[in-house]
Amino acid sequence: MAILEPILVTGATGNVGREVVRALVARGAAVRAADRHPARIDALFDARVASVALDFLDPTTFDAAAAGCRSLFLLRPPAVSDVKPTLNAFVDRARARGVGHVVFLSVAGAGTNRLVPHHAVEVHLRARGHDWTLLRPGFFAQNFGDAYRRDIVEDARVYVPAGRGRVAFVDVRDVAEVTATIFASPAEHESQAYTLTGAEAVDFRAAAAALTDVLGREIRYKAASLIGYAMHLRGRGMPWAQVGVQTVLHAGLRLGQAEQVDPALSRLLGRRPRSLREYMQDHRTTWA
Image (cartoon, rainbow, N blue to C red; front, side, top):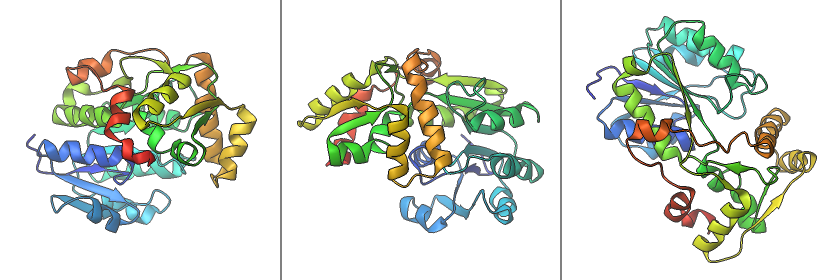
């Protein structure tokens, strides 16, 4: 990958962003990693990764972050629900500064689901040219080490309003690898939307059983009610807007919205995607 101008990676210190940075660096790409606090980037990566300040709530950071970059990996921070003055405004400024291909990390179903903020970003990108690619992953395996971690560590349970719904969990590392592939040959992926899932769907009871096996201690699954889950998240200090998005996304699992296995990830990777158990085995110290 011979790219002189850097690829700007937003959300570079998060679960997805940091893996995207690593995948791009592994391919020899120049990377500019963005975060509200650049010092966090410097602590995560070596000198091959340039850091820059970017705050979607502060438009004065937009121009400097995007200047001189050829491409953009765009990720919506969970706390940002109003995308018009934030992500969409940043895309416009980045375009004005010469940024070309945009890879946007959306979510499965965002093309038709107007309730998720990602939908408005997708519409905005589609209305302004063809040099974009939409990645629509399903639920991440890494949710068990992030969104669900505290419940697992403190209460030995997975607590979500998914009922008996099954999920084709996808590993963030596979999403990052696909992202690097797209940036290596962006013209081949223009105006494409890829739904990214794992190779098999499992319910949360089976997921808890797998975690029990990997950790050697019992982890149980407790199906939450929608109201109970929302209040649980709010009690953990999550803002109401984020609570709403999280609850809506998980409620759809009851209806089978995340159980379908899509072949796109296998095709783009050229191999079978990592399984949920592989993720758990590779990160077992996460739940110590």
